[in-house]
Image (tube, rainbow, N blue to C red; front, side, top):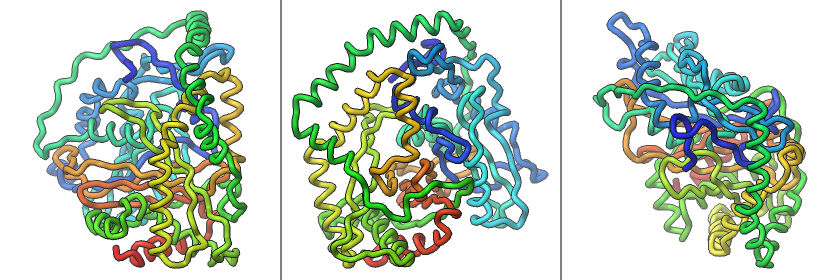
Length: 458
């Protein structure tokens, strides 16, 4: 785990971390997040007013446990190395924990629309890269929370870890006595330049092992070559606009697990199969050719490399998985996906891509920035599907139980659909996130994914 905050004044981003800063544009914000729903009454005082000040105090008391939430991104002069994170001398919780009211009586659909709107606003890089928006005014009395945290400082797994730190494991958990926090002074530009140069000199010694390990194994190079195979051209890949839509698909986790095991598959296999069914239905609806000989779609499926609690940053590899949309029978489709995923896991493909991503640190920072921006025209995948296991025990905030959580995965420049999957307290929730300008028939996808689960007995 990288040290930050009062243990060390700066932490340098990796090439993968920095990539999310470089490819971000106004049309493609690069933060991850979620929409969560809580019991409402504990958040309000006796006169029904939202206890925003107390919420901010409670969250501020936990920030010493996640130092990155009080750090800002500082560039390295001349771009000789990746940016660093340094303590925010002017940190103010008011800029990060906010309250917004939806017009009552509002339902979930109104909250999801608000969340999509908030997620299209880029985070202010002069401040730590996160926001929590509490949403009041729902007709059923619940309180929602929209989380935004930049992908440069967390991946999906560490994002969930942050949530478990900021929230309580008990309804009546006592308030924390936070230690005093004193921000370190920033290095000057000259010192950041010197440290950046020193880091560039030392880095090859630490990363050449990854490069050598990959080069000496032909199978590893074959896995790399396969991941760089072009995806089929479909309407799923087009330039995204400036709007988003979020729709959840909810299922009982135990039911999904039981049906998956009936077919010698995993929960993730079944989820991917249901999504594949939804994508098949969407392309058929659009009049595109889908038959047994149709080439499979290609999905990017991140795989966590976190080995210990508390590790932040992007510690992920990725699998590029074929989605057999040409298979009409849902059970045959599941078996095909399960066999492929098992083969990918046994081959160690995730370890290979993990080494390759670490080797990217060897690229000059300016060149890495240019490569990162090319993601907007990438030809290798049609969709992103990411599955993050959440806590099985209930979480609380201000004594209010967290009832439901819907993940949000950002879109890149030519990916019009992304699917986030999160489990919490026996529920499995898919956050289907798309661009309604490029995907005006988004409801067809939602219905297709729902049908994909039903066809598999879930």
